[in-house]
Length: 529
Image (cartoon, rainbow, N blue to C red; front, side, top):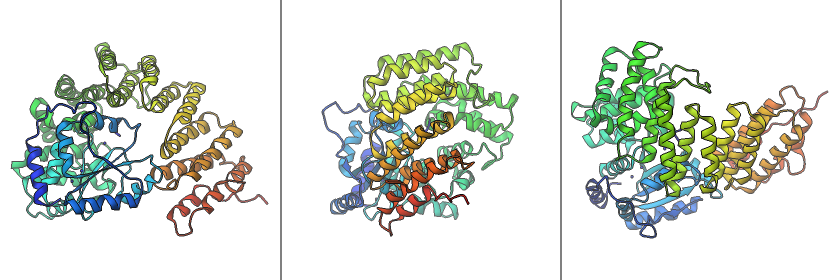
């Protein structure tokens, strides 16, 4: 569900920060056909260098946005942040760079900036220094606040973290910058993922009393990543602290994104075993989430996110693969009503892509599979990226054991997908399903693998980042499919035959890192003696 994630040191930037502080959360969206952010599209290093040259010439910071057309949280940003009149106005004071992950060659830039998940927003100084990564899952006013912190701080989050970790003086705004950093999209820029819960807990403990909100936010983030025994050891005092937070509507609203996205994970971290304590915490979270669900200042997507989190809490002790969870009838009806209302009322295409896909997920998690399917099918013609909805339909059918139907939807989703990285990603998903659900269809398996390798040959960045991972997934699945050596000849044809993977790799320059990645996708198949 969580696909989200941004900005220099000059007096000009400080002026921009002051303007952002004055921005009103209820600022109306820019009118259709009116002013818009002057995004500079980038797909290659040369495009980035031009953008940085502009930033230096105009003495402005640079805001880099990494996203894709189909991505629901990317569409949520477009529906609630990028179209805000205040954001559009402030964008005149920084260089806005859009890297669409599906532009030919764009995945190479993913490696350069160490971005993987869509969306990611990075604020950078004119010298290329990364100032901060913005939390894309926060609501628009919170993202604006995080943007302001990055603009006004004067230091990179890396430098701030070094001082905070060493016990040196860190200002209040800098503590807030750490609290609002996009830790979930850090990609080990500041700390390895395995060490993150412990670091966040340490930062929370080190926060001065005057920065209680930052301390709470860091604590909640640490708890959200601690449900497998990492990070924080729960005790009665910690549970009581969280319960007091949840009872305070204002404090909970300030931590809305963490509470909404991680209620079940935090509950498990605080109460690792099922029982009375866990149920008490789940109830406290549910009451807080009901208030967020009814908060008209939040977007539809955020309110629906609160409802989805309530469903996750209701099935917290059920097996993860439970298809028909035992939920209260009132909660199931609440899901039905909210999703139906959103479907009726949404008119913006970006918002529809973000909310309807989440609505279909909510229905499936509530065990309302037929209604989830019906919603997705009805919205295929309304979506600018229907292949995303098709993949959800495929997932629904797969979970319910309807193999033939699942494969039909996976095939349709791949056939209609657009953009080189997306086609490889959707193709790899279809391939994985085909190998799992119909391994005996050898001709079909081989033909699909060959088609994916042919598509890779057309993209200059096919063996970078997301595209490389898609192809590696195909190679791994081929290895599993041939674990007994029963498909040796098919794999030899795929690797060494005319237009096979070896020829694709051979077209890459010897010094290109992509070549080694390509050659590792499918190893030579030794001939039997």
